[in-house]
Every structure is written in structure tokens, then in C-alpha cells.
Length: 176
Image 1 (spheres, helix red, strand yellow):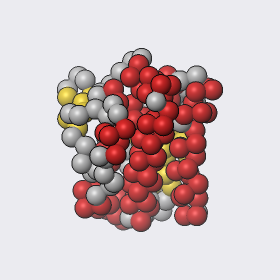
Image 2 (cartoon, rainbow, N blue to C red; image 1 turned 90 degrees about the vertical axis):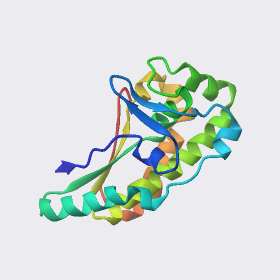
Image 3 (cartoon, one colour; image 1 turned 180 degrees about the vertical axis):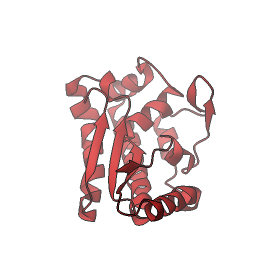
């Protein structure tokens, strides 16, 4: 199989989030999400902003022939970590603070990001991807109990909503 690996923040950009990829740093968010009002201001995926991904999937499927293509998206928790922290973080202190101190805001953010992830994966499936992978770079920063409470329900919804597509799905998470 082949995998279409793109930057994890592609769907964030396609939802209007200002993201700059800084050399030797990674994604930096211009206006981090820190409150319920920030979550409420978030937009959904603007499909025309991921046309290049759709076109790339179509081209790859045509070139690969019988070799299956795996579509790819960052998991809601990983996207949330970048949004809340404002960029890469080793300890994810702001992210955890929101989860524990503001669970309502946290789950609202995760719902928005879950919808965004589902839409982004649907674009890839509609363009011909044969399977999907949800990639959770920062899942290993949480305890198993915290992961199950604050993250798993949202990642599970991604798979539940796409289950009817009849394609193989995998969840890759460091430490999960």
C-alpha cells in the first residue's frame, strides 16, 4: 500500500485557521484557542481549500493501479494540542489545563475538530482513497484514563461516522 501523508494542519488551514510552518519549530497558530468564544468562532472545512488533496488522491489512485492508497488525517486531539498550545509542545500544559479545568470548552473544541477530521477524510475517500489512517502524534502525553475520558470518544466518532464506507481504518497513536 501507499499512504498519502500530508501535514497534519492542512485541515486547520482549510478551516481558516492561520497556521505558519516555522522551520525547526513546526506549526505555529496565529491565534490560539483558549476560550469557548474561540471555539465558537471556528469554521468548518472549506472544501475548495482542499481541492489539491482531492486532486492528489485522484492522481495517485490512477498511478498506483492495484496498489491501495491510504488517506491520512491528524486526530482531533493532536489538532487540538496545536490549537490550544499555539504550536508544538512537549508537556501540553495549556491543553491539559483546558481538558481538566474547562471540560465543556474542551469537548466543544473536540467536537468541532472531529467534524473537521471526518470531512477531510471524506474528501480523500470520495477521491478514491482505499483506506484511512487517523494519526495521533501527541496521544502518548496523556494517561490512559485521561485519554479514554477526553479523547477516545471523539476519535471513536471519526471511525463510527466513516464505518459505512466499507474501507479499512487504522488509528496510529504514539503511546495509545
